Length: 178
View: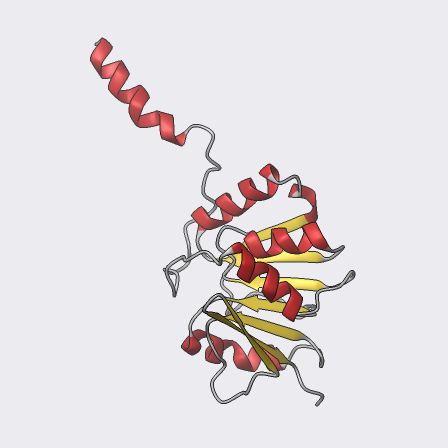
C-alpha cells in the first residue's frame, strides 16, 4: 500500500503548481512552439517602435514573452493569443512570476478568427504560409499599424525594414493608407 501511495505521489507531483489548461483547442496548432530568444524579442519591439499607448497583439504567443516584455518596457495594452491551452497557462504563469499579471492579457483563441482590429502593433513568429493567410486581415487594420515578424515573410509584400539579430531575421511592415 505504501508503494502504491508513493507511486501516486510521484505521478501527481509534477502537476502540483501548474496552471490547469483552459479549454481543449478547437483544432491542432498550425506550428510547433519554438520560443523567440530574448534579444530577438527586444529587437522586435525596437523595430516596431513600441511606444506608450500602443495596443500590441502577439499572434501565436506561446509562453507570452513578447507581450510580457512589451508591458515591462512601455505603458501598452498587450494581448497574447494562442490556440494551445498549455501555452496560455504557461504565459499566464510567466506574467504572474514577472509581476505583470494585471497588465497583460492572454487568450486561448484561433488567430484566424479572433478580433485584433484595435491593434497598433502585431507581432508574429509563424510560417510564411500562415503570415500570408493572415495578410488580408492584417491589411484591414488601421493604416500605420506596425507588423513585425520573426524569421518569416509576408509573400510578395515587401518589408519596410529588416534586421539581422545574431543570425535571425526580423521584418517590419506598416499597413498602408487606403
